[in-house]
Image (cartoon, rainbow, N blue to C red; front, side, top):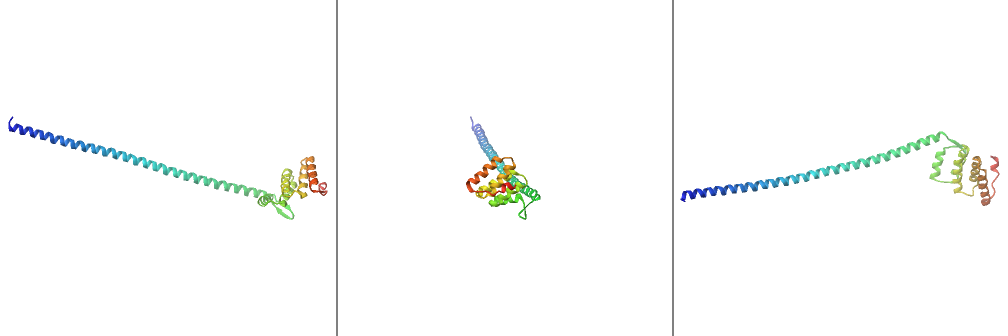
Length: 194
């Protein structure tokens, strides 16, 4: 082998070495680019998922706020409806006013007044008014309310007995009057006047 062939061989080996080195660098560069691309896709996917999650969370919060607003609106509507019904009932009740002790009273107002401040007189007035309009069951109810407040007052016992008689329960009326007489004494002959 001569020197020229040896130089050509060395040049060829050097070219192969340079080519391998370039391929190696190119391979590392492609590998790094691919790795960066994969990392970029993973990060991008992560942020996309985070963004979707954030949007879903914001949407959920808006829905919850809308539900709360709807519940508040529903409660307001319910309160307004109840007020309207109450006003309507008061209006209807005020159309059927009753004369008591030279004043015009309204049964609904009397009931509201009684429930705000229960006392014997209001319960007795309600018992009498219901008796006068021949609603004997309600008259009995209010007579019993008055009796719960003051058991010794005979007026509530008398109205109770009169309403029982009007309903056809003479025995019940007699038992009530006998119980009163046994416990508290004589009742005037007011029952006979009716």
